[in-house]
Amino acid sequence: MRSMTGFGRATRSTEEMDLVVEIKTVNSRYLDLNLRVPRELNSLEQELRKEVQSHLDRGRVELHFELHPKSGNYHDLNEALVENYLSVAEKVRSMGAKGELDVSSVLQLPGVFVPREVELSPEGILEKIVEALREALEKVVSTRSNEGAALKKDFQDRLEKLMKLTDGIAEQAEQILEYYREKLKKRVEKLTQEQHLDENRLAQEILHYADRSDIAEEITRLRSHVAQFQEYLSGSEDEAIGRRLDFISQEMGREMNTILSKSPLPAISELAVEGKTEIEKIREQVQNVE
Image (cartoon, rainbow, N blue to C red; front, side):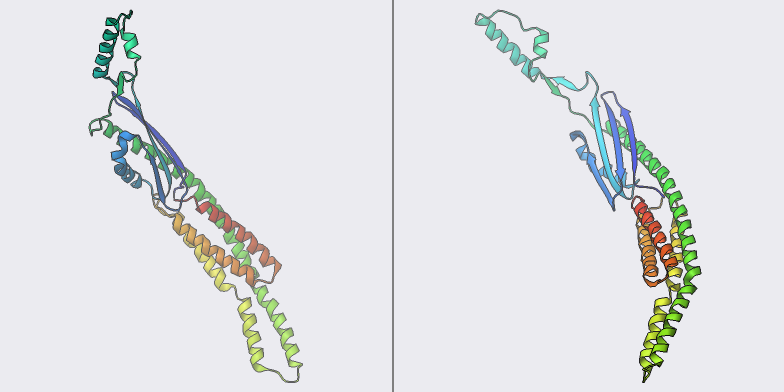
């Protein structure tokens, strides 16, 4: 199990430039890729996306590339413009102006240097890009795995506590039956004191209290959901289980809410409220599981 929070950074160098790849990931319902690449790498965006998708299943991914040309390799001389500058200088001198246009002055003139186009090739920068991206992604996966291990431990602790609370509720369940039995007994005594006992009404009262007193199904389903949650935690680390855990935790919350609504006893209500709190914390943590 992995979380969706991670970071990875990798660098590569060629004779012409240094490359930096940084990846930051946070939780998101789906895989949401945000790529920021230099103009020179625009044609590679689809290939870069596929590489990310082969490593990550969920989360918002901020992918940032930087190209840093090395000194002396990132500009060419605009020879035509320099010749034009020299020609103009010669014409100005022919008009009586004094002074020389030396090399230092020429190099400071606008437009003398032009950016050199970066050439992408499998043997050059492209290979380095793929290498750096894969290294950064591996670091992201590693950090997400480490955080996932911490999340897993937290889930296991909370599930263990939830099961103890559920066991406590089950032990108290018989008291709910006794509570409604006494309530129904008093209700029947009142009905029998009336001049005419309505058998249909008595049957409805019995069914009503019987339904209100039964939380056995909710307890059984809650235990089943906890067992299923634990089973997913024991699965492969590379398996994306976040959506399934989210669904199971919703179902656990639904069963605990039903128990809480059915129980008239403060002891069970207290346990159910505590259980509901644990489930809400589990659901909150699940939002960061890949």
